[in-house]
Image (cartoon, rainbow, N blue to C red; front, side, top):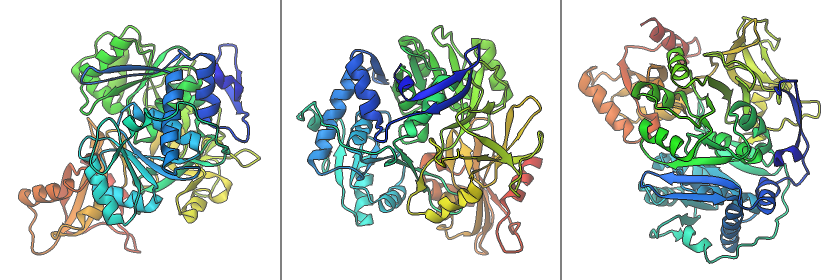
Length: 546
């Protein structure tokens, strides 16, 4: 398998990973050194199995991916996109995403995945922050129109591409690439060049741009092989839209490095029966989804899935009942994992270990991780500490992001004391298993998405009845957490069911669906610190006692 070229694994007698180290050239580029090499050595090897709700189907080999990515790279290069240029991809689960991603890697351009669920204001912020040179988007869900309006208001001009269809104001990239040469000369890039930017939710401001370099794919070898247990010649299915970092975790890098094809189901509305039908129709061997998906599967009934060998989950808390019922029905234990947009997989219930319900598992052998107190000292078993990453002696920790976009101060802050501070609290039990305790900040994890309170509060404050507000996550059986708005109304408005509905409708029209306010509570005043900051921890504790 090709990943052996780039790493050395040390395993025990049972094949469980004890240590892994990387070795790669200074100009490592996943597109050339992995995709094109596989295409040369085993051109007919499956790379992508794609289908949608309209029963369309495409199976792409690595030779196909090389050819189509070369054609796209030529199309991009033809309009002046090159090394270091930033290109936003809003492609849902369309197969063009994979060709575009590899094409941008070949050019040395920086790709910015984004979800189609973003609102106009979301796009305006990202366009201004990243100064994109081009945007490639889906023709669906009025995304082209929203992007055009956002560009107009941002005052930034960018090359606009659409896929699959002709859309006014956009070039049809799917049609254009077919006119281009299917060969592409290697562009010289460096392993430490920026490769992608993900925007991740912040608690006290707008989303942060998280920058990863070209070594990032290699850190996902552990993700794919030892946690998701994808296998050479197998078919791995991660449920994630391409706008989120979970797509990089489960729909591209690690899976191809270890020789597994990726299953892509292009859908809009989650339907458990359709999802399991896809698993059985195509013979999916490993599956990964957020707990929300497993909750729905358990509620609706899980059919036989004879080809499925492994199931994993991450993104939010998994209820013990879901763990037990899924295991009883399938015979497969749900293996939880933990990491961040800024990192790759940090902890998991790994291959060779018996999955422990509710536990993040054990530390990845790829990282040196400690739990530390607020004073920076390691904490004993049973005591809560912050998860921190201690870099190797050379200071370069592959898999950890290399910067926040235009925010060096924040980057230095999370690396204070020479270690990376995740902001996550956890404890270790006497058996060496780690348990998530919560965020030290206020990020809300709802339905598999991360939402920063500031993003919602900013919209809430636009409503004339809102004098002060606080947004928190509260327990929810389906979503893990639901978004709750706590509001101090002005004197002209009395708390009422009508006002609650009015505020919800006002805000939810302006928010992406995954940020929708589900609950509203009116209060006379907020709990605050001496310095006047709202104490969200107090509000969350009140919720726990209800």
